[in-house]
Amino acid sequence: MLAEALRIVDREGVQALTMRRLGTELGVEAMTIYHYVRNKDELLDGLLEEVFDRSLPEDAWEGPWQEVLRRYAHRLLATLTDHPALVPLMLSRAALTTRTMTMMEEGLGALQAAGLPLPRGLQLIHAVTGLVIGHAIAGGTSADDQKLLRLSEEDLAAFPLLVRAVEEGSTASTGADPFETALEAMLRGFELAHCSSGAEPTW
Image 1 (cartoon, one colour):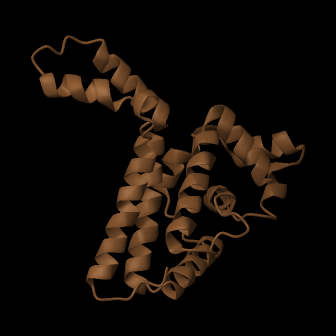
Image 2 (cartoon, helix red, strand yellow):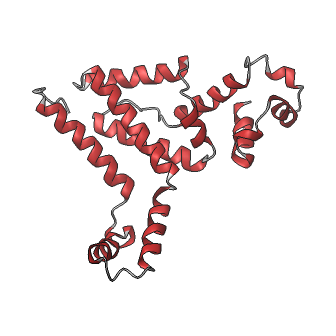
Image 3 (cartoon, helix red, strand yellow):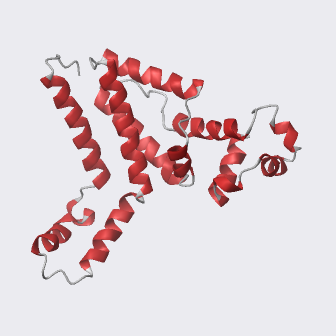
């Protein structure tokens, strides 16, 4: 059911997803859907659960906490890149379901075991998730390259620093992916803040 709902959203957007439409695609009456979800809100929450579930590999919470969060960030970004119509849904719904909170509980447990205080761990999960969603909204790395391309086509004679930034900042020439740069800076910032608090790192 969720797989078919996701196909509808991928093709036509969230607004096209109705119980009647989903039932038609599945070859059942719309009322049949209500045996599995109480209403459309629960169906939408189910889609978001799918997003986060697909973002967690089997070994999601094993290894150094930085690597754990890198894997999560990359898989979440890949999922949203494959299903861009779900990005607005993520912004409009908190999806605080038993399933998503169980995933968060497991993540917090792994971060706590690595020596991070629980409030800091929760901040970190939210920060990484927000970074991924923001990058997906902006169109991803290809959009960053397009922005640089458009700038390179403008007359920037009066803006020498901007000229240098464009010339030196192409991901094709530097190999520096903006998302990777931002993610690593974020993880490093949390690591430094944790160490400066006097805690002994366990990674």
